[in-house]
Length: 191
Image (cartoon, rainbow, N blue to C red):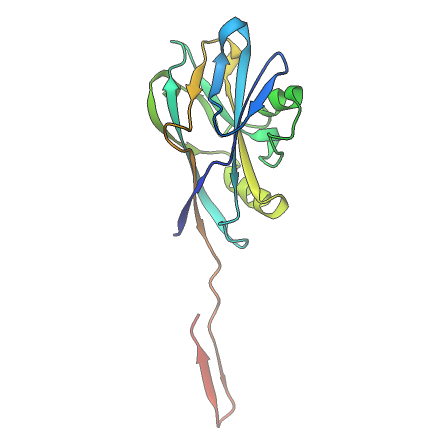
């Protein structure tokens, strides 16, 4: 099955106070940062390299954790906005904060952000159909990240250390073969 790896193009962090920052140098907190602000983050990936007739079979995401979360840190990964289609860059701060925890989790209560390093997450739930729908609707897919309970010290993701990737495994329909013969001419096309 073909697999593609897509580099992140959207990185944003927002907090419970309604402030949001997006851009290539933004580190992304997930949990409680300084001054008691609860931070949530979003990552977005273009789907231009995914064939429009692809049937997605698996989706994984790679990030880099540069600062560990607290001892009880549990991270969740959601479809941003409930289906992965809204653009985190254009949402206001309050909408962004809410959209980071919308929908049913693809990853629930992972402890992986309690240690520094490269992290791969295999996304579950409806992610395959969500990616296919996002391809057709907006040609982009976004993930929301938050700390379960929004009450533990923040883990920090940093794409400047290692670029985030969305890895999509998929199949494409195969054309069925056919043959034609009229007694004089015979044509056979393999599928």
